[in-house]
Every structure is written in structure tokens, then in C-alpha cells.
Image (cartoon, rainbow, N blue to C red):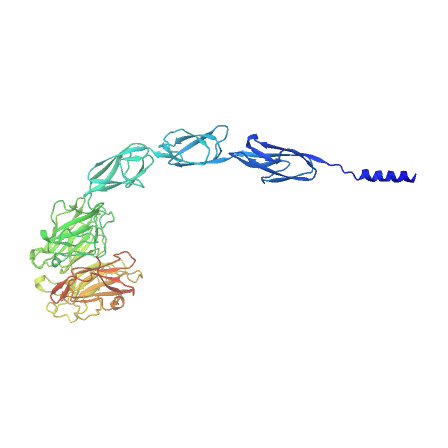
Length: 630
């Protein structure tokens, strides 16, 4: 009995120690079938086994991902067999880019059989490209990996492809005709002017009148008076530019505050500050930087040709440079005796008139005051206001002295004002005796001892003031004791005699300056009022001194010459006397220059030498120093 019990217990222990082996099925598949393989293949694995699956793509395919019992893109990837599992290896065809760029204006339609158009195409895809040009453009061809002029292109994508579709503008003619005297400048951005233009091109047409002509209008396919004219070429264009004979002095104006001066002794001289040079050395510049005949904003020039009896010649700027123009209708105006030339609209008709002061040293018949009327066709033959051997008129100034709206004239050497009536006639109004100083009888007497004069409202009170450069000469004026202060200012006022007799006499820094040849005004200290520069001289003894007077307000000027010049640059001995000065920002650097308008020859031991300077310019110390401007 005991034995049987023991046997039974042993049997129970033996049977309880026998373990059952559990397996699970791993089913492996691929998609698409030709895309590749997954190893190991389908099989049964003991529960808990970790199986490493490797996806291997076929040619032109790439492994994409796992699906089913595992997911993700890791390759190889592991799966734990704890249950039956189904795993699919997903493959996809390789993708190649079709890079398409467009030159010009147009589109390219992409067509793919069974696959939507895209930038990346499965290998082997056939793509059809159809170019479509936009309005006024046309298809030219393909460039890049494929060169072709076919408008329909089919390509099989088996590698990366880069293509450019070229579109070009259609071309249309621009037929331009001209009526009158002038030219038309054609300007096109990035395309040279031509008769055929690509469609859509914007062409700028600039009408450029010839001498004595002005642009009138465009006609033809476009009607306009706009100049320059921008047109867009979208079809053949026929256009006509019409130029008409000018109203020569329309919108003419005087540019400078100062009058124009000229002297017969400067024969052969011209200003070398300017790019416009006279055609021959017998010409003298008398209008530099003062006139704008036609109101176009360009500086126009007047030259006195002493090679031809001193007649005036006129030059105005056109597109091709300066050109001589006939401003007098064939009349010859001016003569070698002209000392000063002033422009003013004497009759308020909108046209500048010319006023000549004649003071010939050699020809007594070329002394006097003359006027040339300005009008639509230019300047008229001169009319004489007065003339004769004793009418030595060295200077002239024009301004509205009595504020009646008409220009009046003060002429050097005269004992009367010429009060304008707006019709080129004048009333003579005697100057009170307290203003006058006797001069040499042979010259008719200098009133105010005037050598030069200007009419400028210096103090801003609305009345023109009379600036007078005097010539103090003991032989001519024996009763004058002070010969060193040759510049006076008479302040304008309402009512006769229009100026206060209590003149302001400016102090000179040189006791030997006995005459003043010219003056110029400029707001040098930038305080809103006009300061004064005066060209003074030691008689006619080849020694001149440029002096500066600062406007302190209240009709007071202080000589600050030594403060604004470098050293003694203001003092110029042994130099041929210069007649005129101008103060302008010549080089447009924001600072003014003092320009010498005259020969300025330097006196050497063996004769006269070419000048070493012709201007004064602010240096690093902010002081005026001598410079040579070419």
C-alpha cells in the first residue's frame, strides 16, 4: 500500500514538469509585389521570439514604411512574436524632380497620365509640357537638359530634369515722323532705341526743339502735349512730333540780382569759370549766368563780338549743347562801347528787354543809353534814349524806384532819374543837388561820383536801395578830402527823391582804395539778410582789394574782410584790375565762391603773365583763399 502511494506521487511530479511549446505565425508581405523583398519570409516562431525584419527595395524603388503589426520607417525593424502577426513592407518608386523655370511671360501646362501634375515625378512617368504665351508674348523654345523649339514636348522622367521655357515679346514698329525743326530722343530701359520694339516695352519719347523752335504736340496714334511722353508698345504705333517756331523770349528772366557788365578794354577775354566758351577770342562774355531766355532753367549766354564791331551774339542750350541763335531777326545790336548790359521787363509784357550803357573811351559816338525791346521774335533794333560825346554812361541800374509797377533807370553821369511809364518812354526827374558831386566836364559829370551802381533792396523794407561804387580822383574832385572810402549806400524810401541823402559810407581797410568797380551780395553768415562784397581798387594802378561787409541789421554794415580771408588773400597787388565779381556756389558744395570776372593778369618783371588764380574759395579753415578754377 505504501509502495503504491509512492509510485503515484512520483507519477504526478513527472507529469507536472513537462512544458508545452507555444508558437505564433509571422506573415510577411510586400506592396507592390515588384517593389522589393522582406526577410526573413513568413514563418512560425516560438512565443516571445524577437524577429528582425529587413526590407530590401528592388531597382527604381525605395523602402517607404512598415504597415500592419509594426509601423514606422526604421529598416531593419524588430517584431516580438507574442501573438500571430502580419507585417507588410511598403515600397514606392523613386521620385525625380522636373524643375521648370519660365523666361518671359507665359505658362507651361504639365500633363501626366494617371498621375496629377507635380514637381516630383515617379521614375518612368511620361510628362507632356505645353507652353502658353500671355498676351503680346510668344513661345521661343526650351533650354536646359533638353533643347528644343517644339511647342509641345513629351519627356520620360528617369532622372532629375531641369528645363526653362523661353517666352519673348512680340515686336511692333514705332514709326516716328517730325514736323518742324527738332529731334526726338527715344529712351527704353535695357533696350537700345530702335524702330522695332518688343511688345510691352515702355518707350520714352523726348522732343528736343532745334534753334528758335519749341515742341508743340504729338499726333497720329497718340495725341498729347506731354513731353517727355511714355508709351507702351502693344501694337504698331505711328506718331508725329510737331515743332513750331518759337516765341523766343516767352518766360524769359534774369537769373542774378546783379546787373551784367562789360568793358571794351577786356577785348579777347572771356570767363574761364564756365563750360560755354565763345567761338573766337575776339568775343567778350557780357551775360554769363544772368539770362534764361526761354525759361527752360538753363543758363543762356550773350557774347559781344569785338571782331565784328561789338555786335551781340546769343547762345542758348539745346540737347546737343550750346548753339548760336538769331535773337534779333537779323538786326545787329550792340557796339564796342557797351560798358554795362542790364535785362529788365520795362513794359511788363513778360519779355525781357535789354538796356545798354555806352561809355567808349575811343569813339565819342558810342556813348549814351540804348534799349532793345524784347518780344515774341527776340530783341529789336536798339532805340536811343540819349547819345553824344558828353553822354559817357559807364553804368546803369534798373529797378522800380517809385513803386508804381514800372521799371525806372538810373544812368551813370546823369543828373536825373528816368522814371519809366511802361511804354519805353521815360520822364526825367532831376536829382536834388545835395546828391550830386561835380565831375570832369569832358565826361558830363559823374552824379554820386558813380563808377558802378546797383539797385537792390538790401534791408528788406520793400524799397530798392542804391549801391554806388565811386571814383575818387583829386584831379576831378578837388573839394573831396576822403578818397579811401569809395562805396556808398543810399537807402530807399517812399516819395521823392526816393533815397535818403544821408548815405552810409563804408569803411575801407586800405587807405589807398580810391574807386569801387563792382559789388555782389550774398548771405554769407546765413542769418537771413544780404551781406556785401565790394571790389575796390588803387585807382587804375594794377592793385585791387576784395572787401567784405557783414550786414548787422538796422542799416549797419561792418567790415570783416580780414576775418573771412586767409591771410592777405583779399589784397592783390600787381594784378590787372578786374571789373566784376560774383559770389555764387559755383561747385554746388553748399559753400560760396568769389568769382573774378576779368583778365586778372599778373604783372611780372618782363610783362604781364597769365593769372595764377581766378576765384576765392573757402578752405579747411573756412576762410577764402585764392584758387584757380578751370
